[in-house]
Image 1 (cartoon, rainbow, N blue to C red):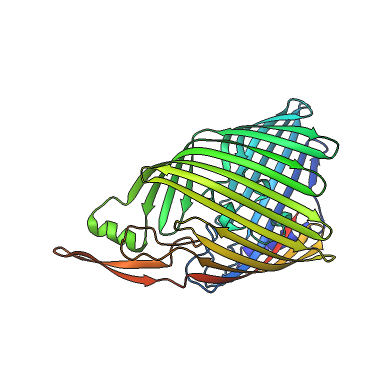
Image 2: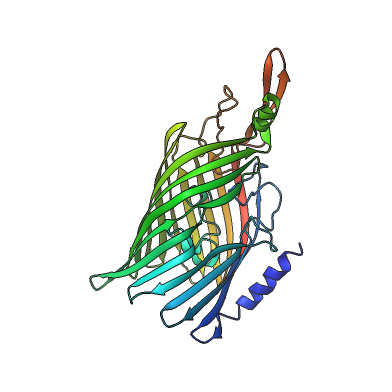
Length: 398
């Protein structure tokens, strides 16, 4: 519980302050955070990197970020963002970006360093809960790239006008070799990215924002099994616990934000293709969400779905209420129901069982091994194929 107090102190500070100008027009400090309390009714962990289970969790949605922006030599700038993400401890935060930029003209900026992948509508402010109506972004869409949010490479940002009302931004990007780690609790992934490239085009006016993005990457996923029935089978069979697979992955994402009257409507849809030694797979994900502003109150609802035929197939429904206490402080009360769409297949212990938006499948087995008859499998479930998740969050910026 002691971890909570620094966050509460910063929330109180945030309610009275905005970004801090350390050196006028040259050095600026800002920050953001979310303090969340959440609980599921299913012991199977829900939502990658948040691991929400059937015990009250004070850290599953809690984030804290600091950003330092500098400007020097007229047209040069630098930015560093450090974030304690939900999966991090406060003593070991992550550098989410650290880059140097050059404003070559009024319309063109070049950047190099660690940069955020401009893939979805909220990619640039993924951890800034104050920036979107719901407490957490839909896992079906925002975890489609296996939790990899940044790349190390170069990008350009070209701004242009379309008529008198519309403005546009074109961002091509290229990422070099990098390695990302992902803990799926029963599996540990070491993702070795050979290259990462793509583009994003955003066109907007006062009420409508549209975005199309494309990502193409080649990678090797080294999966080390650390628990569960497959781990037991590997141990009993004397097979290596780490398996390496090469993948080619492409993802096309379309997004829209539309505000009309008191309504705020968000929608994103993604289509992906994966090629590996096991063949080719296709995925489709999407969500539609809306909030209605009534003074400082915003009731909202969101439906998200993974249309894939694989283990991730699922659907989630969210309803919540947001209260904007101040311009930079808000409170979310939220309920989510999520359910698997995939079919349980006990005929093959190596076949991926449906997990939907859970970190791993609720279907698992223990292994008995007889040197004559071979292994036997005793199937069981960690929990149901669905979950009800209740959450309370306080967001702030300064």
